[in-house]
Length: 89
Image (cartoon, rainbow, N blue to C red):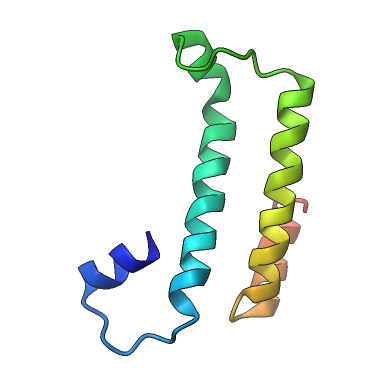
């Protein structure tokens, strides 16, 4: 995702750490979207497992781990902490 954005926007001078960081952000965003859509996906038959307590707890654990990694590697650490506080991490 990060590499695709860079190519679409035609960035030439991008720090080397930008792309791996954006890949982690995209993965976390995709997982968060899956978490939000779980009930609708189960209702439509796309998800065989009903999203109960353990399902949600497992997702939240992984999302918290990914959010901590993103905050630790964010180029603007004060802003990353503001975002984490907003989402109660």
